[in-house]
Image 1 (cartoon, helix red, strand yellow):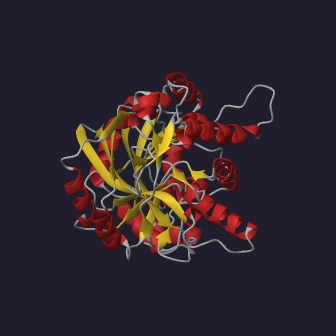
Image 2: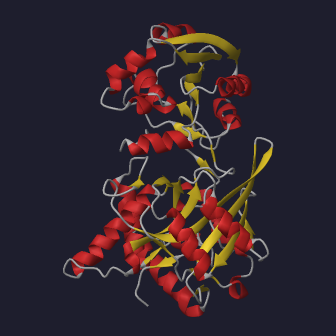
Image 3: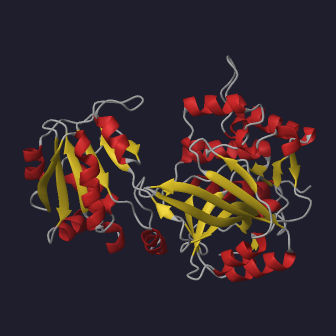
Length: 441
């Protein structure tokens, strides 16, 4: 990856705000109205007040950006947030439970030299959208800071860089907090220049694959270019806006897992399992494997045991049947016809087969309304039983395998972007642990 640097990050002054758990927040793009309200209630200094500001009644919706920027500067003046005395990188652990196991995901935050996607060895894996980038650019302009980190993965089979940091932090106390999902977060500032130099040299020539935060990364590039244009096309090499705050993690970290994103489809015609088999049978093998929403966990367990991107569980609400759909010798040719411009690796993705071939082509549902996306099988059951918040009528549900970390690497190196919701890296990184100021002070 390009050059990494330590930074004098802005962090909460616990003497003023009290519990760190009450002021940090999940990323803005996973916060719904109810969670926003809850986070607001925890503290007048909760970070969501900057990342996802509530508009004042009767005001221009665009005023939220000025409001966030003014609040941010007030917090700095009041000592609510203070700069690190010395440049640091920040070791970051997340301890969480999933499927009966406890995991510790380990990485470190630093600032990474910006290069446009396609111009260096920093690779995206998802598409970005103009509206989201415009939103983040307005916030960046107002606050003059990277308010939250992007999430980057780099290859390090022996986890050398992280092990150096783990040894440094082993006998040092961590800053700790717990989020609304019960995930524990621990942070250690590392200011030892020798340790920082060793870590930087180990990762300097590696590729980086953006796992999360594509919009924020492209926004950082746009903000840098905007500052340069305002300065006659020149921005000093050491300007903070030449960098973006990033959480860097080895692709081989034992705590790195990718969760599935299952689909609940609404606003489409209802079909039964016989009609499903008739439409898919020439390209996939179909087998009835369960009945009723409550059979979803057993169907999913079978799919996980198959461990094949070409295996799906499709539920037809019309007859309450689960159909196990698996690829066969006809599937690759059919995928080639609908997405022949993509690589074989891309065409082999479960989400690519599900949307491009099964839903859009064979079921004839191209242009269908955006599905309801869920990550837990129990959420699929709840959705089909009408128990999800804002639940709709779902004629069709799909259990689908997630793309793997290796899929991210291979497809990114083809300079391709995965279909939407191909990956879900759990848990999300917290916002408010470290902020990267972009001014020259």
